[in-house]
Amino acid sequence: MGGDGGDGESTTETSGSDDEATATDTDGTATSGSGDSGGLASEVEMICPWASGGGTDRTARQLASLAEEQSDSSFFVSNVTGGSGSAGFRRAANAEPDGSTVGVLTVEVCTISHLDISDISPDSFKAVMQYNFDPASLTVHEDEPYDTIEGFVEHVQDSDERVQISNSGIGAIWHLSAARFAQAAGISDQVNHIGYDGGAPATTAVVNGEVDATTASAAEVAPQVEDGPLKVLGVMGEEPVNIFPDTPTFQDAGYDIIVGAWRGLGVPADTPDDAVAALHETYQSVYESDAFQEFMSNNGFGLVYRSPDEFDQFMNQQYGEFENLISNLDLEA
Image (tube, rainbow, N blue to C red):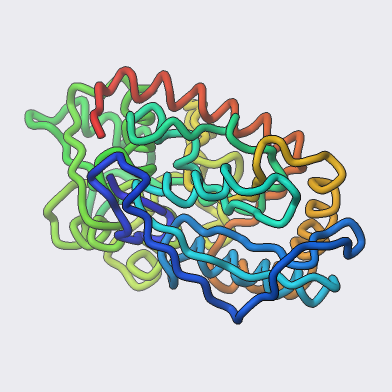
């Protein structure tokens, strides 16, 4: 199964075992032990479930760097990869619930249990904050005669052959996004989902005419859209994305679809509320800083803030929606 779909990263595990984890500790050597630093542990380890260099890793490191500047605590990032994100999630969920370990949560925490990869779910964590959402986009070649979502649906309905939609890996978020759209539009039986090793090759497949469309993130297709030869018909978010402000949402076209890659922070489920509050206060301050806002904007990452209660509600809603979708797709890990 593909992972970290918003980055096009290829850190994947075909096995459902969390024991195949690879851990890499970076950003300096931290001292051991935890203490009180304005309610924060003296050191905070952030566990990233995806490989170094990808979008989740880069945003986590930015959060850690700025959090360290704004507190007396030490923040560092460990990459724990494997099992479609489940190895890192499990390491974070099973850590000591004292506020010294924070998991960097991605959309896969709401999908992997439904794919029989792991029993990890939103219930494994207490939410701290969501800081990102990158909606899926429906992108086609600029030579296609239609320019709207409705036009694409009509094209699929009128086609004598199944329309091919590429994604970053079967079971990964961009595949699930396309499947959700096809389901809502009533065209599931007229679409083939073609998995590639990441969002970048999935986008290249549209450029080369291997497939009819892709549902990668807007940031991933942006270079090919800005310079040609692709065009974005719509995005699956609540509002247009900054890099394509004139591109409509699927809701504008009458489809109640909010699907995409997202990132947030969580701690072991038994972590005391005061520790969660201290972490949230620090990370919220980082989120609101000019430095973090500029970093996210300059790198094409969508900014979305949700408080602990809001993020918890959002994850549980996503978990239920993906349960229904995946059961209908009859996917296997």
